[in-house]
Image (cartoon, rainbow over all chains, first blue to last red; front, side, top):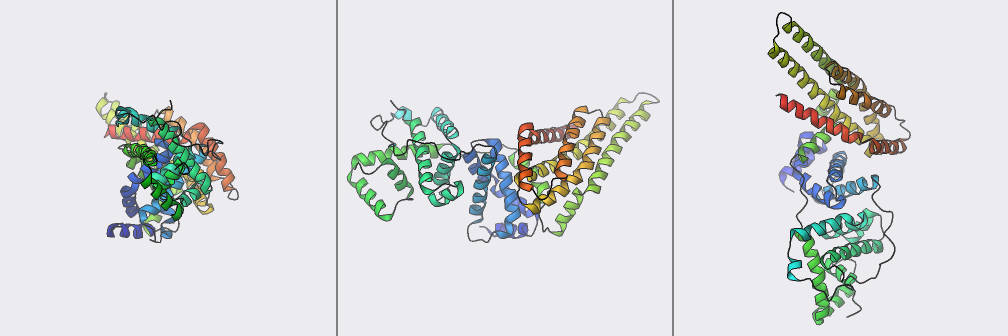
Length: 186
Length: 251
């Protein structure tokens, strides 16, 4: 945290909206990224970011500096993104049945992707993005929080209201689905 | 190495969810088995492809929209700094009502002025200029009013905090009179579409202003359903954006 940021946090905590705007400007992009990854929807992500900053504004005085400010904001943003998805009825109450224990590589271990398939083509990227958008919110959120946000399984479980076992399964399913894009089953 | 599953490899990659003994066992197995390394590499390729995706980037207007949505809502928090009290005061009923009355008077005045100008002989330039000024002022006031309304709707539909909802109810009540004045001003200025939209907003604001304090969560669920089914928030934002664009065009 820079000295400037520490000053803005203190001022914003005392009700200074101009200082808060500086914090918004500094962190809006990063918060949008995490919200867009979780929601896979630009409009919902924007709403989530707004809610996240509003919640941050309301609770700024509770920020005790033990975690980095960006970490604190990210947690609020993740919750806001999940809340937006819940409110739109897009979060499943549980993971789908079946498939647990199925080996990720069972289908296509021999069929290694050829170099042309591995090329980072625009088509492959689109396919991966489409798969991320298609997977369930729990799967995508668990994967995003673990892979992109580096959160622990325990933290992810708490954020998603899952037990750790279900949280692991959500990540495994997400990885399996992503893998199917690169290695379509033969 | 069949006892090491791909799920284990995922957890091993993230160094999470496995105890140190398990991690060491997988490390040793990876060192010993080419087949296991190949499976691990296949997994890493998948994750590398995900990492290669471009990070989501908001469009150019995002930060402006974000702040416009946030700013009116910041006034609701308590306790506030003294100058924020002044912001809130600005949003209080008499101020907004006066602003609405001013806009109404301006539209009426512009029409009168235009009439006077055209009486001795047609002066279309003066008339157009007066009309444009009146409309620009009205658009600016209504856009600010819609921003405040958007903040009220968002807070009402997203917050379960009694303290916030109490403040929000007051703010909604403060917007009702101004909303009525703006609707009349828009109708008088010949903007029937805007007048109709503002009239459509009035019962929502009245309902928010009179939401029972004892059942905030239940009330919010009803509002959320209503907002979803009517796209009202989207319409508020779209109208606000249109008015902003109009204002920019007229300057």
